[in-house]
Amino acid sequence: VQLVESGGGLVQAGGSLRLSCVASGLTFSSYTMGWFRQAPGREREFVAGIIWSGSPTLYADSVKGRFAISRDNAKNTVYLQMNSLKPEDAAVYYCVATRRLLIATITRENMIDYWGQGTQVTISS
Image (tube, rainbow, N blue to C red; front, side, top):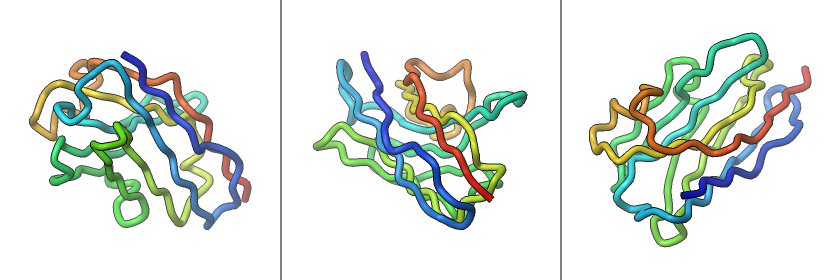
């Protein structure tokens, strides 16, 4: 199984980025997908999750209203649209997958079956 993230980079505060994650080696449409992030010196944290059908979705309070997760099962891809970016959003963003269908399980690291290698998001103020 591979989860390959892309779309990270340097953006000014207030700007937008769209992350993508292409999955292979699994039946993508059967998995709950999500994103975690980890900033230097901080613990890894849940960002967003999406169930196999596209709804419901789940967000960390810190990104609600600014980030949007979506998926395209035909392309085995999950996206994270990030708007109104803040300096505190800077981190390595990881794509994750779990076989569990309950959306809440995507928030727990010990429930994650697969992790991507991460993509760096840097915010300039």
